Length: 184
Image (tube, rainbow, N blue to C red; front, side, top):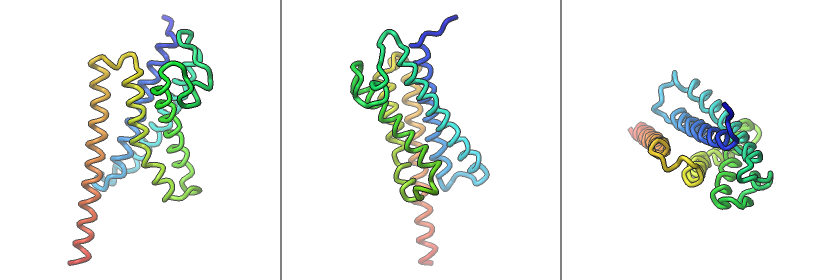
C-alpha cells in the first residue's frame, strides 16, 4: 500500500491539530486552581510533550506540501504567510498559527531568560493559535464537511471553552475567597 503525499498531508494536519488541542486543554487544566495537586506534574509534562510533538508534526505537514505534485507549493508559499497561490488567506492563517505555536513553545523553554511576565503574555496566544488552526483546518481540510470531522472540530472547541470557563470561574472564586479572608 502506497500512501500519497495528499494522505500524509491530511493525516499530519489532523494529528497536529489534535495534539495542539490536547496541549492547550492540558495547559488550561494544569493552570486551573481547582485541578488536584497530584495531577499538576503529569498535566504539565503532558502539556509540554503534546505541544512539541504537535509542532513537529506541523513541520512535517508543511514539508509534505513541498512534495505534493497536485498543488506543488514552493518553500516560501509554505513559510511566508499569504504567499501561496492556492487558498492564500486560509493557508496564511495556518502559517500564522504555526509561527504562533512556535513562539509559545520557544518562550516556554526560555521562560527564565524572557521573564515570567513576557512568557505569560506570549502564552495568551495559545487559544488564538488554536482558533487559527481550527479555521485553517475547517476551511481548507478536504474532510471538513464530514460528520466525523465536524464533530471533532466542535467537540474540541467545546472542551476548550469549558476548560477556559472552569479556569476563569475557579480563579475568580479563589480571588473572592482571598478577599473575604483579608476582610474577615
